[in-house]
Image (tube, rainbow, N blue to C red):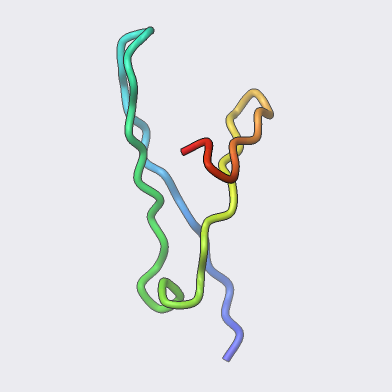
Length: 52
């Protein structure tokens, strides 16, 4: 069954120069078949592969 879904990330606040850990929120009904390939920042930067 094909069904639309939305993957989300909650906002996190961190001081400049520190690391932040973001959790990808995938709906449970598709989590077994979804794999995250990359992240795209609001500035258009793409982080993929071993960047995370």
